[in-house]
Image 1 (cartoon, rainbow, N blue to C red):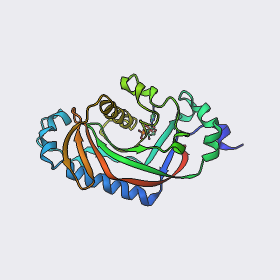
Image 2 (tube, rainbow, N blue to C red; image 1 turned 90 degrees about the horizontal axis):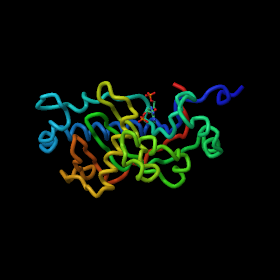
Image 3 (tube, helix red, strand yellow; image 1 turned 30 degrees about the horizontal axis):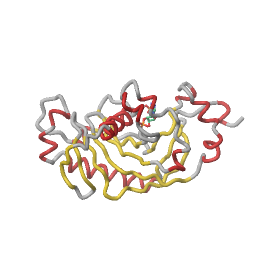
Image 4 (cartoon, rainbow, N blue to C red; image 1 turned 180 degrees about the horizontal axis):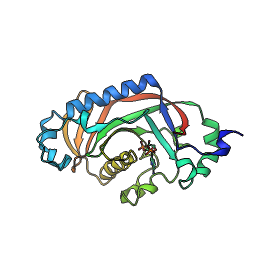
Length: 222
Ligand code: A2P
């Protein structure tokens, strides 16, 4: 009996190939290393952490997690709503195991998570679940009005005790502010791109050159 008929995976998603995983991790480390030395970051430190610290080492603050990937559908072995419907979609079956080029367009940091925004192409959006943004509405109400694919991201690290799914909510919050017309406070032109501050410890680095990441559409049974 094929595995897919006996159980569903923990999640489906695009898994970055090993070489590009290293590159993305290095880029993220470089960003964190620079960010926590900036005067602007130090100025907003009380928004970032409630602890009365004068400094924070962001590389220590965030814990890296597993193989880098962009989740499409979290299935929880079939317990998540819509899991079976997603797994049964012809496009999911057709593209399972195929190679893709993901475009990483921004890096973001909040007191909870650090992640990369993934800007999905039309082809990639065919694998994106229709309700991915709506699922976030209880936590991020404005997510209801954001375009499909807005939540697409790669979790690069989480603060202690924070679940990786938080990364998508943090990204949606920033995109919702942008949609409302808040540009963020332009803080600095960095080598990697322009850094903006969105309040409450939220930082977004729009990459000058998006990082193109080779990835395989597959699933993890965990
Ligand atoms: P993300 O995609 O933001 O990185 P876990 O280790 O908690 O079981 O999660 C496995 C993967 O599935 C992680 O990549 C995680 O977050 C994602 N994930 C976990 N729970 C959900 C959820 N309720 N909705 C969407 N994605 C989830």
